[in-house]
Structures are given as structure tokens and as C-alpha cells.
Image (cartoon, rainbow, N blue to C red):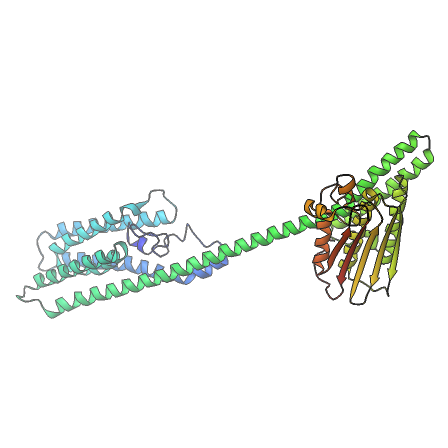
Length: 472
């Protein structure tokens, strides 16, 4: 409710948001961007606020001193001096209350009484002006108050009336029949200077406000970008774990379930030797999947690729698939064919091809009812291709695509035969996961199948792209 609101970043009575520094204690910059954005404007506005208060106090003291100085005095000098003290008290009370509220030290909000406070200060000044022309110069700091707390037209009108009052008081004090030129020109120039300075301050304030809004918008954009990047990272990691779980743990657990059932059947038929072999295979499968789990949690490559080549890893996978199918009572012959000069592939390519073969052969074993499966790995110099073929029951690719699609191989055979949609768990995650792996390496995946005609999954990976997130 004082001059402080007009020079305060927290706003002022009747003029919310007037720039300044009174609220800096309660709203200190929270980050370097805020500090840089607000440092210069706060310094300037703090100087303006302090200068205005000091100027008002100094002019009031000068008026009181001249009023009480030895020599000819007007009527009732002590009465006018007491009124000056009342004016000082009203001005100081409003200023202190506003500053404390802006700093968050009190809950009472004096801004709602800003216009009443301004009217009281102005009325007390007019009364003092009637008693002594020495208080005329208090009009100049009051001009700034009117400019900042009133709408522009109303402020210009009150400034004009106050200027006329100053001229009239100077003319009355001089006793001249005609006012002296200085008594007219001085107040007029002072009022004009105050108006120009006040308008310049408004322009400065608006510029500072625009900078603050731009900084706030930049800060919000930066926070939103950071949040979106974090969310994207979370989703990417979730997708990576989902792919790894589907292609390793889910397939391994499916194998363990089948082996456990087969071991149970062997025991029921009085064949403990076969049951023991199947239990041993279960243990090996569980150990392999435990190693896979530890590996992909750490974001490393598959343990099956440690100290070996992709060709050897795929050959072992084919052998394990055959053994696992035999343990489950199925006659599945799986083999690997390698064409071309083997090349050292980037690690993401090796992991993607191995995972694709794992998911494909697991679905061939579990759903395709196939007698043969062939994995063909071909090195063509600028690219590497892998085809997974089986002579199983096949499936409808359109139906599988609509359900989320098959993982690989005769993944979709489950759709035609067991109600599965291509994943070992029937989740429909298989083909989508595999496509994401391949497309992340700028490769392509093609699926050829039909009910009763087996399935071929063809994968092509260019070797001039080593980037991409394979999720290994």
C-alpha cells in the first residue's frame, strides 16, 4: 500500500505485478537461470525504491526544518509540524507493511488498501501545503506514486492538479500579484520530468516482465523436456527388459515346464533314468536362464556369446533345441547352415540375431509340431541375413498380425493350433519385439507362412549401421 508495491516484483495495490525487489526475500531465484534473469532488473528497481523513500523523507524533513526555523513563521507552526509527523507515520506504515508482506513475514495483505493509502498521503500533503509552501516539493515523489498506483489517465489528471496546487502555493507565498516565471516553470518541468521518468520506468518494468515470462517459459520447457526424456528412457528400458524377458526367461521357463511334465511322465512309466536326464536338462536350462537374467539386468550381451562366435552360439542353440524337444517327447531335428565368409559382426547385430533365433526355435519347439527346423546364416559382405524355417503346421499371418503377431519361426503356429499368437506365453509380444530389434539396426523382417505349409522368417541386417538400441 506504499511506494514499495510500485517498485516490487510482487506487485502493488491496484497494480498487480509492479516490478521491484520487495519480494526478493520470499521469492529468491530457485536456479541459475532465475538469478541471471532477475539480477540487473532487481538492482535497478531496488535503487529506484530506496531513492524514492529517501527523497520523500529528505523533502519532508526540509519542510519541517524550514517551518520551525528561527525567523518569521506562519500560523500554528507546531500544528503543521505535527501534521508532517502524521504524514511520515502514514507513509512509513504503508511502506513497512508492504515490504513485510512481500517478504512473507506477515499474512495481512496491505495492497488491497493501496488506493486509500495513496489518498490519505495525498490529502495530508495538501493540508501541509495549505500551511506552508515549504512542503510543495513533496509533490515530486508523490508524482511517482500516482503514476504507479493509478491508471495512466487518472494519474496524469492528479499530477496536473497537484502541479497547479504547487504553483498556487508558491504564488501565494511570494505575495506577488503575478506569479513569478520560476514558480510556474519549475513545477511544470518537475511534473514533466516525473511523468517521463515514470513512463520510462513502466517500459523498464514491462521489459523485465517480458524477460521473466520468457525465462519462466524456457524453464518450463526445459523441465518438460527433461521429464519427457526421462519418460522415454523409462519406456525404452521397459521395452528392453520386456524383450529380454520374452526372448530368454519366458522361453526358458516354458522349456522347464515342458521338461518337468516329461520327467513326471517318465517317473510314472517307471523310467527313472530318462527322468533323471530330463531333470538334469531342466537344471541346465535354469542355470542358463539365470545367467541370461543377470546379464540383461546389467545391460550386457548374452552369455552365450562370451568367448565364442555367433555361428557357434547358433549351432549350440540348435542342438539344445533338439535335445529339449526330445526330452519333451517330440522328434524335432534342428540344424544350422552357414553360408559365405564369416565376418566379425557388431555386438548389437550378434545379440539381435541370437535373440531372434532363440525366440523362433522356442516357438517351433512348443507350437509348430514340426519335424525339421533349419537356421540359415548368410554373410553377404554388406549385410547379414538369417532365415529360420520349419515344416510345422504354419498359421494365418494376417490373424497373427492382428493379434500382435508371432515371435518368429512358427511362432504363429500356436494361433492355428493352440490359441497362441506367437509368443511362448501367448502374449503376442514375440513378432513385435523381434521387429523392434531388427528395425533398431535399420534391418528388415519378412514372414512367410500359411496354415499347413510351415513358416519362414527372414531377417536382413545391413552391416553399415552399427547404431541402434538392441536392448542387450
